[in-house]
Length: 128
Image (tube, rainbow, N blue to C red; front, side):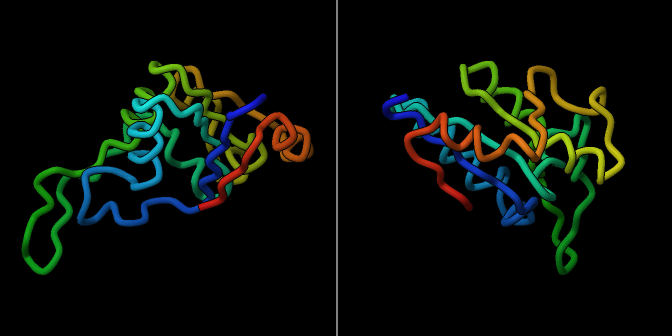
């Protein structure tokens, strides 16, 4: 358990209009690359990050196109491929009309009722 950190993301699409990724997912990947033992819990609207096939292409702000739109589902998949566990609150997934088959492969569903127990498995919980 020592050193395991859980990043809780409950808001979606912060900063993604001007960036190519979500800052929390980006810092998680960067810190994992430096040896930190970080994992992710997507809850609330954050569960949408695990939805396969998102497409933010075609976005324009003030007539200026976003030429490098975020591919959040790819970022989630890369975290999993790199050894991070990415949890989603299954109740929040269902409340948004999503099915398990809509989600990135390897995402781990967890019921809302089990969150306290999940938090206990980590030395630190960072809520963004």
